[in-house]
Image (cartoon, rainbow, N blue to C red; front, side, top):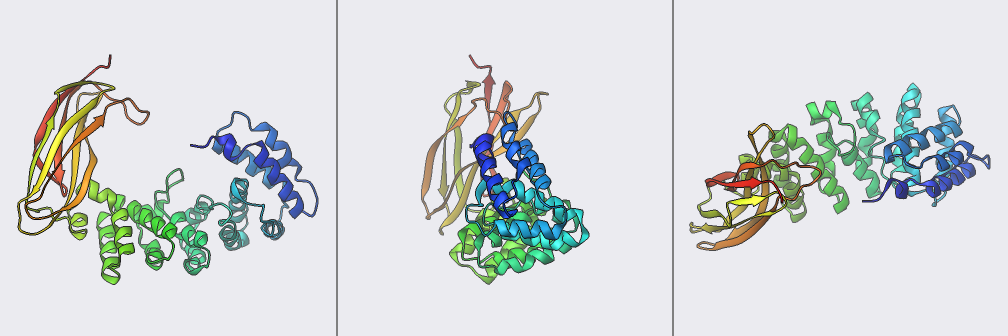
Length: 368
């Protein structure tokens, strides 16, 4: 993962100062220039805030003049990449500070996003006035540039990672659905992937809405691109064993299968080791069976209770009488996102969201 200084370091900020100076008509962007030397040790978010404030200091006070300068900067192809990230943030500050700047500032972010995505910078507009912002963004679904089209779906994601949530769309995703519908068949896989991720966000809060939306899209166009989009968009529901999502994707919860396992290799392991188990799934029916095979580990918590987490094994179609078998190694190595606790854990299999067989206990002991 790139370091903060690699994304927004002194060299990048110096280059930004140079590009802004040109757009300002040769007047130096002195605050931005000085800022580059003071970023050492700062996180990426702190660097962004510092450079954003420096950009605001060097830009004119009035919005029309700000827009003129930045559109002049956009005429320079070297005004691109991470140097534009804090500029996007500065545009958001200006756009929300003056009532008459809201819509033109949002349109300017649409022009900036091909240089580096403005998916974070548009969110304050969506939080401030959702429907007004969506009216501005709606025509972008037909824009020639895929980066601008993607901004519609990615910028409006209710739960975009590393960004503030959009409470109105978390509560009710309906206002954004027409935009996603318009982009579902986009010629760019980059855009369709964003639509799928937005659908997945919706599924976390409104699973029935996500499944119904996916159903409509498949009914309108059952091509491979749409099927791939829907599978990616419903992945969280599939992993959770949601019956409606599994059925829509052809994974019948009542599929005629026989499951063997999990057969653990040892019933006691230590933190840092692997749990190793064998499993097999056989199609006992007379038709091909589409199966999503997962395993669930019930981890021991600090208070001694257990909490389940689903992990994927395989998704495949089994011919009548076909038997699939494999071995899985599950790591219990300590990681930053999970702390393991000693005690009796449980592991079981599930097929198409339905638990199969019983829970198999194993003891997780302290590491050596």
